[in-house]
Amino acid sequence: MNDQSDNLRQGLRPELRHVAIIMDGNGRWAAQRGLPRTAGHKKGVDTVKDTVKNAIELSIPYLTLFSFSSENWSRPKPEVDELMRLMKLFIEREENTLHKANVRIRMIGAPLEQSSELYQMIKKAERKTKDNTGLQLTVAFNYGGRDEIVRATKELANEVQKGLISADNITEDLLSNNLDTKELPDPDLLIRTSGEYRISNFMLWQLAYAEYVFLDCNWPDFTKEKFQEAIDIFHKRDRRYGGVCARSAL
Image 1: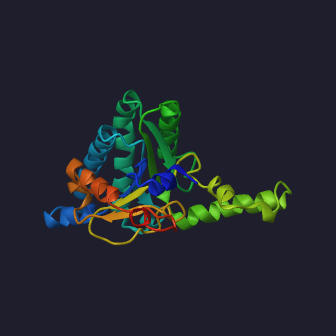
Image 2 (image 1 turned 90 degrees about the vertical axis):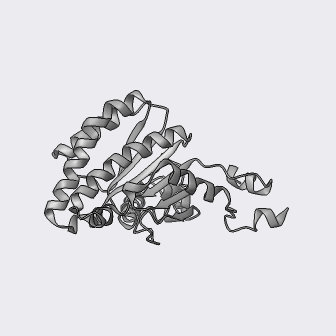
């Protein structure tokens, strides 16, 4: 039985270790103001900076942000180009600040071309911050939950084919250890902004027992107060993991 289940059995408030966020609504935020979608993305980057700072102040050990899905490549090229530019700019400008704040940076998602400038920048930031012990910041980029599971399944199939393991040895833990998030605990809380009620192919395996909170605000309007609101909702939930309600069992 894990620590969360122990807390439930004892009627304790569930621990919040890992928050995952789907940062949605940049385009709608811009449209409401008569601005181009790219203006919304630019404002959204500022919100990322604030959210990382707020996560540190709120003593959250793990934060995962869904920044760019594998499906987002189908967006208009000028918008994709602007998103790539903003990603590079964020790494370039924030890498040292995050490092000084003892933040460790990870990227998850399908591998990029190793010769690309963005790939090299990502790997440099990961290497620079790999020994940091503060907030563990994970950015899901070129990421899709189904793709991640397929890639993990292929790895296990290769091991079976090579005779390193048998098919009977494949367990949930073994599959988890082949996912991009193998070094991370599963999220406890998923937050999605913009008022949409779906998870859009994000961390399909890892979110199996997370609590979901959907907020009506668009991502650029996601403040520390909104962050705290989502956390307060989380702490009012009964996390059952397939069992009975903790409160009713007491």
